Amino acid sequence: MDETEARTAVEEAITRVVPGADLTGLEPDTPFRDALELDSLDFLSFVETLSERTGLRIDEEDYPRLTALRDATEFLVARA
Image (cartoon, rainbow, N blue to C red; front, side, top):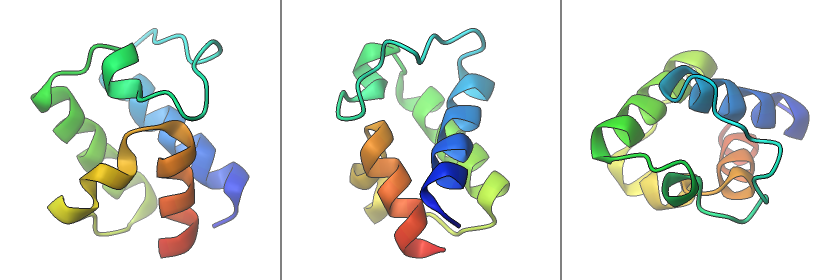
């Protein structure tokens, strides 16, 4: 998985959890959980959706690496 595919997977997972989320103004290092007001259940849904979309197992200890667009993208590229 390259960076473009990973970024697309992250953005699609976010928009499935937060339909209509405007990601255009979201900086790569801005924690999207805060910016999009995701609660704990929303974040878990995001992780589950991302795992299903990519086929990668995402463990609880990986969650801190999934807080911003850049971090989540880099995580997927490294794990694929």
